[in-house]
Length: 457
Ligand SMILES: Cc1cc2nc3c(=O)[nH]c(=O)nc-3n(C[C@H](O)[C@H](O)[C@H](O)COP(=O)(O)OP(=O)(O)OC[C@H]3O[C@@H](n4cnc5c(N)ncnc54)[C@H](O)[C@@H]3O)c2cc1C
Image (cartoon, rainbow, N blue to C red; front, side):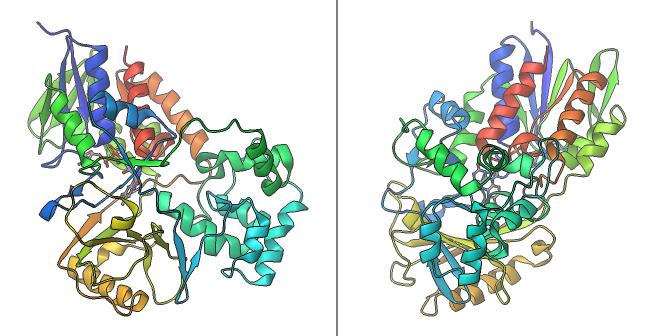
């Protein structure tokens, strides 16, 4: 005898976390997870060909947000940190590698002396950045603005285009001039409000901050890569029925029951967690909650691609002390970043070899118009420009990410709050989870999925 039926739509980290939380909350209920594709994990995908670890999507979990690591350790997984010998990345700009100046945090300078020494910026760029000390506030307590507008005002275009944009778009793959300050880096607004100068404000915060009690790497993965998390979660949930190749077409409401439609089949549920991208959720809820559907449909998702390659140890010479490089927008190079995987991570037991990942795709340009072959050719051409003596990889794979990362545009926080409130009124038995709500990182997805389940009474 079961105690109700709950359906989760989507088998990425959000959906799996939701199913796990449902199992805890309703131990006697029937729980069904419906995944459109033939595999679970969504954006999380690890290629282990030949005993290597090559991540096709995310490669790290931010430890500072504990939800994902706590979930993993609860399942018996042991996290690993990044190689302690690596510190930060380079910026590759017009044919040269520049170290990221000391004190750059989330793309903004906190140490003007270090910035002055950097050769990445011109003297006028450095002078413009130091105006942060004297410029009046620009933010308004009640209004959001573009992150780019805020940073360009405080530090000038050079700092933004050569440092902040490549660093921040590594997280959001977004256009910094459209990204919401409030949804992405609200702390910048707080710094300005409290201290006027962002540099002085962050220095002040550093002085007041309690010494960190956690040591070691800021980021974590697992010995066989991040997909261990989604695989282990799926295996651990023995009472959850996971159905593959089960794309949901729409939801309907009848007498307090949610009808989940997949082709000719209907599953009746007491509660549903939608853990799919925003535009999919929009089409599923359109009939019952058109206002929420409208908000979700407006959230843009750029397409991205990751090209991974494995070389013999002497086929490419990359430094062991950096995690890779970021590429500010510049003519003749479309790559947005490269990771020296085998320098950044020492996955235990992997064979010898140099593993590299390159990222392609920006908000506003569709990189997936290129075929796998074209992406591969582009990668080789650009890598030969960056590393003229590079050899050929012995393994290579292109990972395509259509609708990769939701864009938090100006006004996102308020629109999402209104949409969640409306959803509770329109349809309390259907709750939303996913990277488009209030955090794109894996720990954010775990947290949001749990909150969604808490709301199901
Ligand atoms: C290249 C890349 C690098 C990243 N790097 C990092 C990183 O290093 N660290 C980090 O924390 N985050 C990173 N992220 C972000 C993070 O990976 C994602 O935000 C997160 O994995 C999203 O999980 P999700 O479950 O919400 O969505 P998804 O992973 O997109 O899962 C949604 C699932 O729903 C399924 N689905 C869709 N439609 C239907 C339907 N109609 N019916 C049933 N199922 C459906 C899909 O097939 C998919 O499996 C990265 C993202 C990308 C693309």
